[in-house]
Image 1 (cartoon, rainbow, N blue to C red):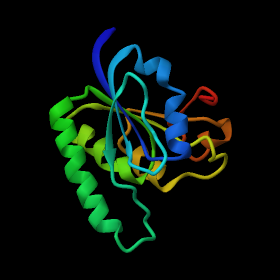
Image 2 (cartoon, rainbow, N blue to C red; image 1 turned 90 degrees about the horizontal axis):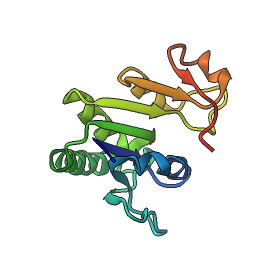
Image 3 (cartoon, one colour; image 1 turned 45 degrees about the vertical axis):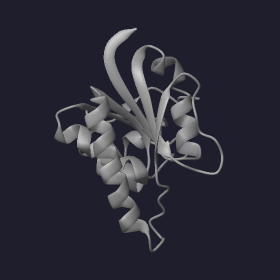
Amino acid sequence: MNNIKVCFAASSGGHFEQLMMLKPLMEKYHSFVITERTTYGSEIKGVKTYYLQQVNRKEKTFIPRMIVNLIRSFRIFLKEKPDAVISTGVLAVIPICLIAKLFGKKLIYIESFAKITSPTETGKLLYQFADQFYVQWEEMLKVYPKAIYKGGIY
């Protein structure tokens, strides 16, 4: 196992499912996962998992939940000290991505498989900060000219 520690971060649902496609990569590094706590299980056997509050930008509790997630993400970052963050998005994990960059760590972002011709809001934000930014559709290189296209992670 490599000595590098990697944080794998994704919100629940499809973003988390995409992150799970990277499980073979998780096994090559000292890894942990950050995701949202939901009613259905999102635990990965053999990988330490931390949970954030589920966030929806259209709900009134959006800002307080993001503040809570920021504080939790900062605590997790200080405890785990990852060398890199790999994220498939979205809102809840923006804080851990930006904290990593603030501390000079690598940020790798994978834009959603569901986005074929237009960007996600999180993608537009993190494109500015990511050390490597991957798209899963060749057409997305028009949206993100400096992105890396290697096909889908499915």
